[in-house]
Length: 177
Image (cartoon, rainbow, N blue to C red; front, side):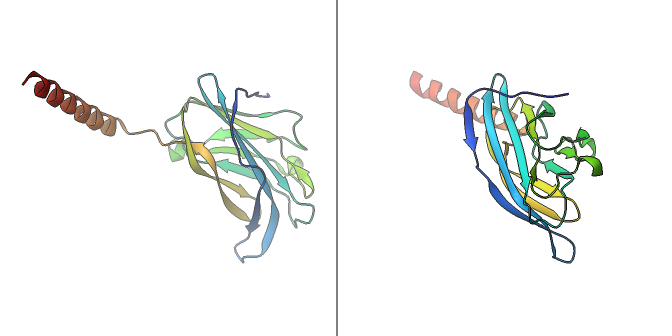
């Protein structure tokens, strides 16, 4: 399956370089991550694409995007936009749906000198903030990238609503005097 995205471009990070290291702090891979956010009908679309430098010692098999808890999402990839596509796209229910994983099999690995496909997460988010994308295989690196802004808890919304109501009532009563 292939997913499209659209709407006006809100942000484009351009290529952000990264270096993934293993548990011994040896370099496992190097590359860059490009993130774009589009204001599509009904919410923002977050688009991730990474490249694995030709000089990297290892392939890359996994991209994980965080901060999606509380949002409706539809995640997939744009076919034909890179060397290979993920075999599995999943939302991690064990983490409250916060993380969306794009998993490549060994046969689909993003080899040194190639790019991933564009991975798309369509959301109902209406704002964004800085989040985290993790890239892994034999090594690990976390990269700051745009993600949906946190959804306020219902209790926080209730308290804020009550405070606004109280303020409005005070103004109304002050106007009567």
